[in-house]
Image (cartoon, rainbow, N blue to C red):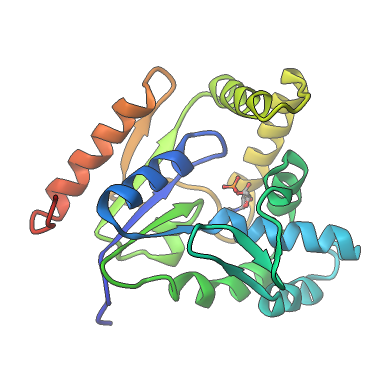
Length: 227
Ligand code: C5P
């Protein structure tokens, strides 16, 4: 298949820093950015609101296929024109996302949507299965990890900064539970894709991780034009 644009995938567990790195890279390159987790978060949130559980996989698939969702040019998440960008960022929405993300009908419904993001001049895609399932022929694949404690601490600080009241022990337990579900589900489990550059970031700063990623992108795409 002829592709319209090059792709960099950045996968990893929650709190690994992949969202930050993916956004930095997309901004640097002037490429499009796909936050695939946001799609699962919206489905999770809507499913909770409508009382649809994973026991009704067909209904969840229909929900994912028909939700009136779009991202605006600033990356805000709009559902039928209502801005739900903040509502999907809570831990509750993340956990709801992880539950619906194990449902094959939901994953299937979101495939076309995610692939439609491939547009010139390029795409940086952030998620759990970007390099393994959605874009297996991506030019560059990155897999970011960090210890559970470090990831929980990063999330704790992020939430604190937003003025939210958080309990570190509970957050750590929730992150563990979410990881387990994401790694052990039967469809598209969280795995390091073949040929991915794995970066263990527990003791690295964001800038150090970013430099390693940039280096890999430069190697893999030597003809890229850098300003
Ligand atoms: O990355 P983020 O924390 O926003 O993702 C929320 C949840 O959505 C993850 O815990 C995971 O279960 C699911 N997800 C997924 N596949 C993706 C992106 C997210 O299963 N590509």
